[in-house]
Length: 371
Ligand SMILES: Cc1ncc(COP(=O)(O)O)c(C=O)c1O
Image 1 (tube, rainbow, N blue to C red):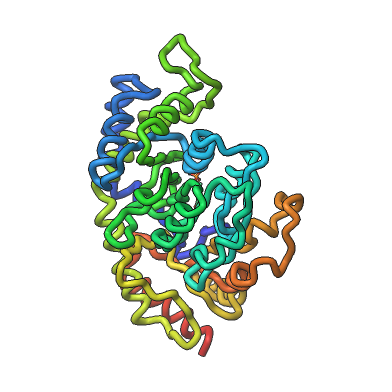
Image 2: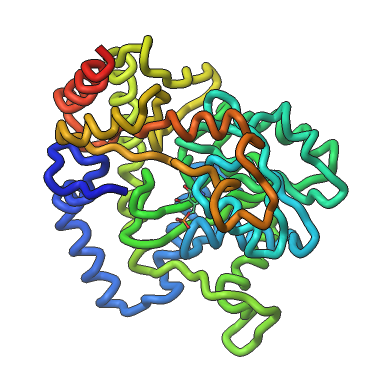
């Protein structure tokens, strides 16, 4: 991302968050250091239980990143060498990288105008090697899960939701992360519920998967002296869990403010030039990002920057066209909607510290550019 130095409307504002929470954060640091239970301390179990209660998840396992949550879910379902997992290419690299990491092959399917995987295209990508579908609830919007689940059930596939960007989002009143066999959430500093570093968690409806991942995250140990199977170190720090417990209480307010910001943008932005996919009536969108689709995207981004306004692109190069993906044999033109959107998408500032006046200024600047 380009530097936010000198911008008076930055894309994110983590310093404002610190200023607002300084006393609470210092009290948390004092408490955790006082107890010195830095690894798998009390706050971990409390955080897992609170997430389960708050969102109705059956099992929650706190981990040190969303990436590990996706990777461990696949390990727990024995997905590996020779297997294929269907996902989308317009995501953060971790969606596909975790598939590669367990030895399997990502198979990319194109997306709809709302940037979510197109269920109508999934079936053609299924082969005898397909083991799972990984829909990505990109931008805070839940994929068409009833259609995806129906396909998965018919073909005997697992569904692993990449819910990294969608804590609190729902479709048909059901939470992101409560649809599939398992889901991975990210609590990266730029997410709506954010840690002060890397953090994540996994949800699953299978008790044996939760129990296995609880061991896998701690070197496969079933107790202090017994290694039941080879695992990894993917423990969430107690300090992060304690911070996240405090921030979880504020999540509803943060989401409400982001939704209010989007309502305002929608009223102000000139829809002749700026496309934002409408929300479906049955969805609750938490707007991890507010991504518009425009012509002359790069010029607009320069213009915003010159006017003191930060923005971001999530993501400018689809995963299937990254150098790392060369061996997968994909080529430009394979995913027309994904590739077209990659040149048109722009994430506008939407964080909870924006004022109405600032949103007005962003919208005026965007509209002014096209006038
Ligand atoms: C869609 C998506 N998947 C996976 C991840 C990986 O999460 P983390 O950064 O916590 O490892 C992210 C985080 O940026 C993401 O946005």
